[in-house]
Image 1 (cartoon, rainbow, N blue to C red):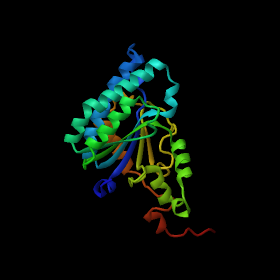
Image 2 (cartoon, helix red, strand yellow; image 1 turned 135 degrees about the vertical axis):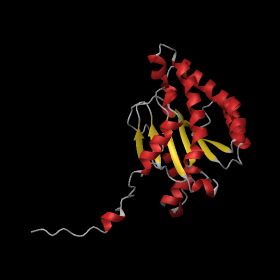
Image 3 (tube, rainbow, N blue to C red; image 1 turned 90 degrees about the vertical axis):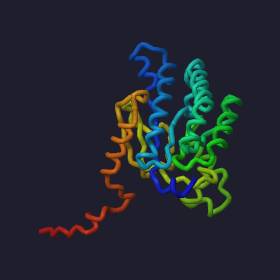
Image 4 (cartoon, rainbow, N blue to C red; image 1 turned 180 degrees about the vertical axis):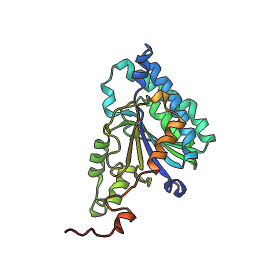
Length: 242
């Protein structure tokens, strides 16, 4: 990834609530997923203006294969359509798209569309958009551990490279989850070791640029200590005990 993007924030989002959004409106769940794509577009357009260099979106987990076949088929269709219709828009906006997760279980035409979109957007320098598909953080960690060749791979930096391939991504700064759920769901466990967490009741289809900006404002108001102390605490005088 380009150094200019690496110096900017890495925000990850668990896009949750599409089905509930549809159910509340007595609509099929697949409609919620379809409207959720519009939320993706809004967030991708807003991200570079808000200082985000890398945006990782949890689109389909390895455990989502357990969902009803009709819903999985609809999701694969939406992903296929997104790659086909949005790639030109991403290229014009300078967005580089990459996918993380397994590809061997995806439909062959979808895997081909992902590879085509990655190649077409390779030179994007405004935002690195990562889509997590058939993704499991625990599986990714196990795979990286199996690839370790020696002590040089078993450092934090070396292991991060194994997880991310040749790309050098910074750890997640802010993790957002929509729909009121408060769990990580096997998403970027290594990369989120010191990320700030933001949970919102907003369902994903309703999430927009203002919600992203609100999450970032809260993030910038927090003290990130990474196990240490903030400067004011380091300088605080000792309190005498009588």
